[in-house]
Length: 194
Image (tube, rainbow, N blue to C red; front, side, top):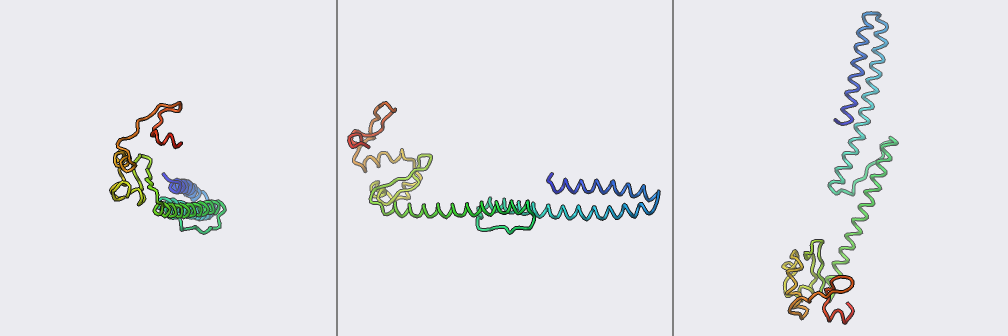
């Protein structure tokens, strides 16, 4: 049950008790009934105003959560004049600005890296966390003698034979044990210091 419904149930309960008291006072004295009715109307008006303000605050929270879920970082909220809500709105606006700037910065870096890899004369293969090829620059595609689309998405282990052949090797190098564990460099790589 959300906060708005709880508050409405509270208002209904309090006003039902006031109505019962008004009925009892009606039996005793009509002036008491008029006084209770005035209090009843004022209390109801204050309760409705509080629920309305609370609902508008919750609508703001729901809208901001929805925009974050959708990745919408261009919309900002205006302050509404309520101190607690305005603090939340300022935090949201600052967070959205930071996320938008970070997204733009990452897109610029991605574009620059893509341009750099495309222009690089050396073959570059980029792997994802699962060891699958996520990107291949044109030089690597030429070395592997396959289009980039045919290479991307494949596990690196499937490329060992074509990769070894492209580098002038017929089989993968045998691992060599060292003090740090298994050394998978080739003898030629060890001589060069790679």
